[in-house]
Image 1 (spheres, rainbow, N blue to C red):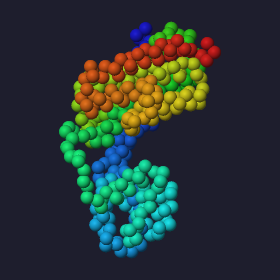
Image 2: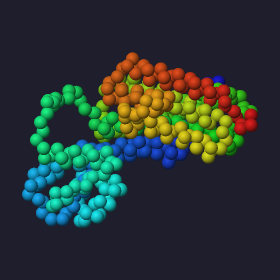
Image 3: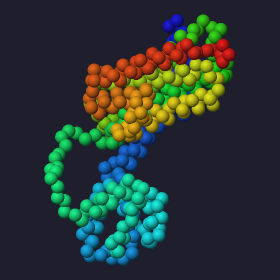
Length: 344
């Protein structure tokens, strides 16, 4: 039995390595995402608000101080316009958040844009003497940059795509091409075949994830504040759960188009609701509850807690437990539904 599993395992790995475009994309895609976001969301280049400025003459003396203070505001990009009409057109289409005319001492805002409301408050406050009973205090502790917060999510997302589409498409393609039909008349059992599929894809995921992780650590200096053993365990369990989920989709289908549609239907909600790109804080309660049903949520949370917060295995025990239960359920369902041929 072990010999047959090893043969399938080796053949699957060879199939992946020979597909140089797929192999390269699994490594380069997450790296490109990190590079892109590091450029977009760096402290010096990140701009949250856009303010249009009309060049219609000299700045009025009575508002010059306010205007200069407003120009010093962080995270605001100022865009010059030659006419009021062109600026208002951009404002109406939410291309800018506020439009000001320093020469006339006027400004225009959008009544439907939250960013326009906040930008207006920044403009008004730049001319007022702040009087408040609150006393500002410094925040103790290390602030985590957004790109460092994003990094675990990108790793988890890459694991998801590699597992779902790697296993899903390969098994469906083999069934469609009659490869699985030939396997059915050999001593190879479904259990041995599925075990080899899981081990092979887990090996590929860990290899590519480790390569991306090492490259980003060396280039950007990201820190893993937790144990590498804890990180490896959450990586292994996360990839196991995703591969098991992919086997459910690939268990009977012989249509690559149908399998692709189902895989996209699974991957997009996970990518949007699993805190890969942004926090779910403040979302509707039912959305948060639904996100807890997605394995990527627990993978991302576990990796992020270990890397960013230095969490131990005990501290991420809930993520480990949920991923283990999900893996068992997915694998059991995939094994029960699996057929060598479509009409078995």
